[in-house]
Length: 74
Image 1 (tube, helix red, strand yellow):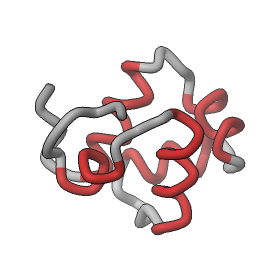
Image 2 (cartoon, helix red, strand yellow):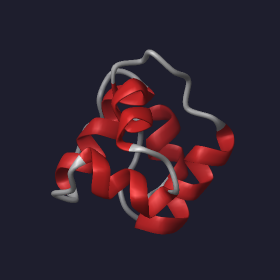
Image 3 (cartoon, one colour):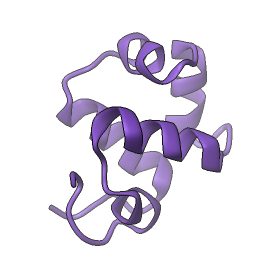
């Protein structure tokens, strides 16, 4: 499955694939739904720590999340 053009789009795509609200997604990785909204709109940069948390929590392929290449999930 092809990823979005940028990390922020891939974050939103991932959340939609998991069928989670911004609030539920945020709770799972320890941030607010407002933070998730800002990340998805590229109003805030996704930190390395956030990427690691997302990959660990949802079994996501870090390479896919960062680049859009490969499989979404491990």
